[in-house]
Length: 297
Ligand code: PLP
Picture 1 (cartoon, rainbow, N blue to C red):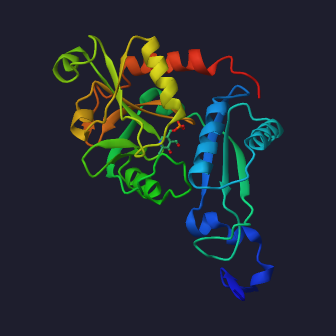
Picture 2 (cartoon, protein in one colour; picture 1 turned 120 degrees about the vertical axis):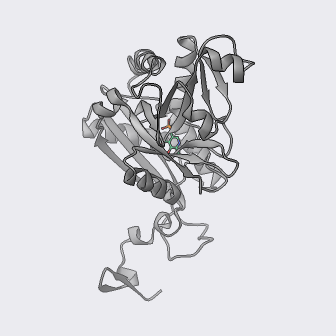
Picture 3 (cartoon, rainbow, N blue to C red; picture 1 turned 30 degrees about the vertical axis):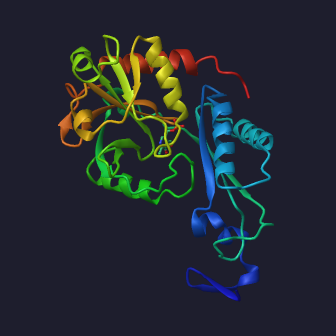
């Protein structure tokens, strides 16, 4: 490569900042994580670091010391001094002239940001509308990769419809997850008898099983635990949009938002159009049990 152009300016290739040659830009060749803090303590850091290590290994980026990532996260978090923070970090395979295979000696690039978390209280109290969108993603959605174009397009489509999240529906007509969240339904007693014969009597909490079609969400694990704590029976089985549209309650979860009620699913109101009783109970249990008294990092 001899020359490059930045906007309308021609520059010599050798003078280019390495950041312009990051494989993350050319190919989305990297993986990322997002963690958050509650009142000055990071939630689930161990779990997020483990998932990050799995993602790195799945795309064969070698030589990253997870302990050094932990200390970078901790140092940046302490330096920022933000008590309710969102910490984003990624690693790409490195910077080099565009070439699919890449050089073996490429050195991974690390990038991190700490920002104030906007715990949107209106979303929390009133819930959100969601819209379905075809799941156009690849077959390894269990890897938290930087390739997020299908997620971006689905979210933009949802926003155009006045919705805060897009819910992916795969080719078989099954809901996988949200564009940036896990997706859950709560069914009441009558549905238990009719459609969930294996569940004990009572409300059930249902979400897609962990496969390569979805991200192994950290919040999901804690939400299942919180659900069991409040007496919900947990079922890991995919839902169709039709089933979701007649659930008693729906909600999404993610690290930055924890639990947010879904009050409209496409054109249909969920329940009475307000966050449901069990969703609210879950929110309380989740915060009380898993977000207070976190260990210091
Ligand atoms: N699914 C997708 C596609 C996501 O992007 C996210 C979070 O960003 C989640 C699920 C929720 O994962 P977690 O609870 O680990 O934040």
